[in-house]
Length: 195
Ligand code: GRF
Image (cartoon, rainbow, N blue to C red; front, side):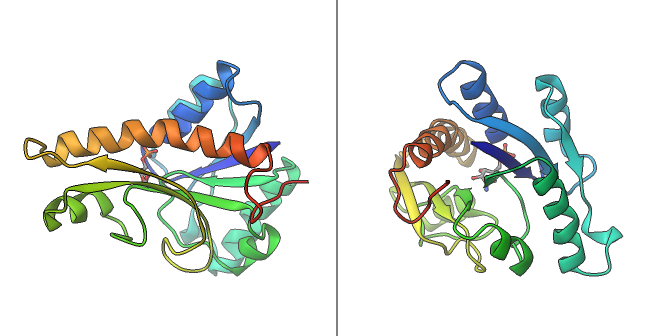
């Protein structure tokens, strides 16, 4: 299975998946990284791993459709089977959804449907709940709304700060994403099939 990882920022989830591949724990090929912010640190991480990283910036295109068509061309050239969003800060449009039906997944730092959106960790922390977590789901046209594949809870202790909670969430993300990609390959999820 050949995967493409989409990211907009640091890329710690990319790094965790790349390490799982490198250690032999995950038998997939990371065909490429697609990033949409010129200075995204994920670019450096990909370079260090010897994985091609392509910058595609929305502003250089006349429409979201043209932008996604440019991405799709890369994915087709790289024979990508599954798109893995890892901190990619855009909604996926019709062009990619139609080209990869139920073959785009996302990781979100909360127990969806609670705390969707850009600041899932902070929102849970400020709401004063005693647990939050991580969700991996199939992507649809909404924001953090597609069918859930797997979740893992993270306790919020009285002693936690926002920073310590972020740290705990990221640690769980870095394990959970590899688990789910492996299970997709093993055919565990009926909703998502890679031929
Ligand atoms: C992660 O918390 C992920 O759940 C969210 O964006 C963040 C990306 O972090 N969607 P990184 O770029 O992988 O370090």
